[in-house]
Image 1 (spheres, helix red, strand yellow):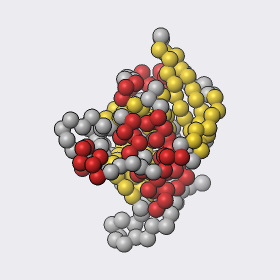
Image 2 (image 1 turned 30 degrees about the vertical axis):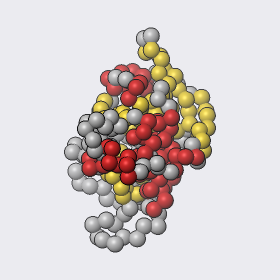
Image 3 (image 1 turned 90 degrees about the horizontal axis):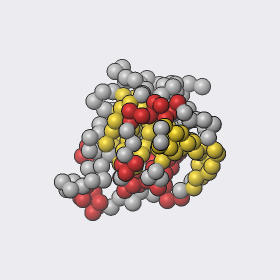
Length: 217
């Protein structure tokens, strides 16, 4: 899939940071903080694009992948009564060692950026295998997500491997969400999760990812 993005550069003291954003806003996607866990609601188009950006984080260890979501409208259908704050999302490789406390200043220095198209044909195919799944549950596993919350933004920090393998969650939503037929009233919409039992979360909360096709204009 090809995705137009904007490449931004921001200088903070002696350091320069490269920030990648989708060229067009992802209007039909929200990230909601529920304190104990996080919810993502999104439509098919947003699911496809976030899947590509998730895979791009695996390929771009020196970039911050920024998804501005916090000002988006909530879905047209009901959201849980205990819905908390809406957040932006930043994806980054752990080797960048970016301090989330610097984000607000970096974000304030971003200009119009330079338009570019990224193409990641492999992004739609996760490469998780049974052996990968087993390896994640060993104590020595370092391919884990860690989260930080700063300036109304959730930072998902991980290795190239964990980004590459978990991008499939978003492509699953894009493929299966629109034609999903409910088989139980407790699951009226297609959903998937980054779950603690998956062996992908270190210091990180679970993320529930749910397809939604009802959005206010």
